[in-house]
Length: 267
Image (cartoon, rainbow, N blue to C red; front, side, top):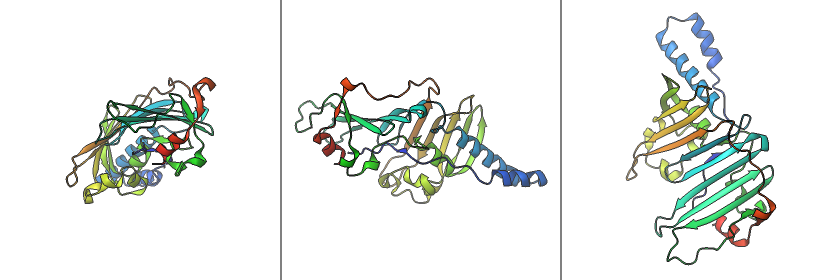
């Protein structure tokens, strides 16, 4: 079962050449190619600045990485993150929904199954928030949690790896991303990257920024590779400032996670 919802802990990086290129452009304003470079870097920096992070207001996010849909919210004030993902079993047809909530040092999960008619052998888990002891997890880092630089959807690494960015007007941007570069190389899994070859270095993307200069969507158009069909990696952000704050679930809604939950998360 794939549990990685790609809520990466990568911080946003500044586009370092901005100041240098702008300074040169003042002296060589007649150079058309240099103007294009400056425009690209400026557009890229605008997008990087638009990516939500853990220092601003709360927001919601949602997306699809080509295999798994995910959604949730970030509350910097509470140092909180909630994320859910739903995975359909291709063989048996049932869907597993996993929700994680992290506030401060505490992490809870809810795990449920739908479409299980006629199936046996699935664990019966309480319909409550299950408090996790991360020492019982084989890979504690696989559990999404709030950290400085929390970047749901990996918009920051993708924009940072952009090799070209054009501002198309009215808050829309387009360009190409090198999926083999830096942290962007971790956004797709090995199976999705396999067979892309040189095409992985020039993957088209589009992005939209609202009137407040906040990113609202980013779409990566991943081409076909081998027998795999083309797909879109999509992430969206909304409800900046109006997203409800995150808090620990009420005591009546919580119990310690049973062993079956750990067995499932460790599988």
